[in-house]
Each structure stands twice: as structure tokens, then as C-alpha cells.
Length: 69
Figure 1 (cartoon, rainbow, N blue to C red):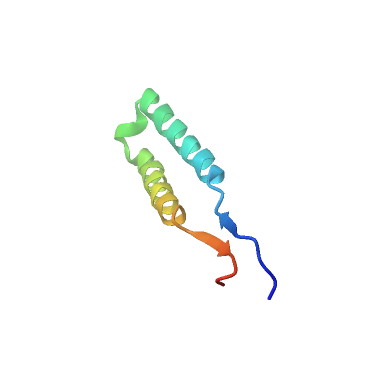
Figure 2: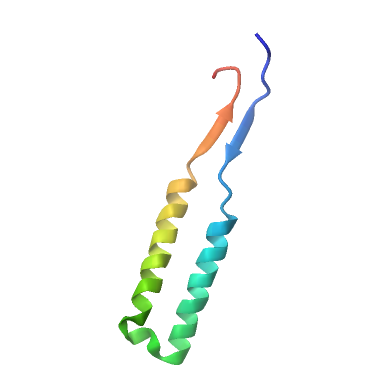
């Protein structure tokens, strides 16, 4: 059997960081304009919550190739 060097692949999280930064920027912009008390900011808060949930779900996933299979 051929010896396989151990390789570990993890998910790239920088797209999640970028998207979360955009959501936070929009949330801060709505706060500065005084629109945060309306229901306009609800989709932004829901989107930010979903991004945090996806981040924690993806942070534990990895794919490992080695001789053990």
C-alpha cells in the first residue's frame, strides 16, 4: 500500500467574515439614521444571526486524508 501524507482540508471562512462585516456596516448605518427602531433592521439582525450560526456549524468541519482512511 502506498503511504499517503496526511492532508487536512478546512472550510474557508473569509466569505462569512466579509458578509458579516457588510451586515454590521448596514446595521450601524441604520442606527445612525435613526431607522433601527423600525422593522427595517429586522432582516439585517436575522441575517447576522444566521451568519453566526453558519460560522459555528462550519468551523468544526474538516476533511482529513491519511493512511487510516
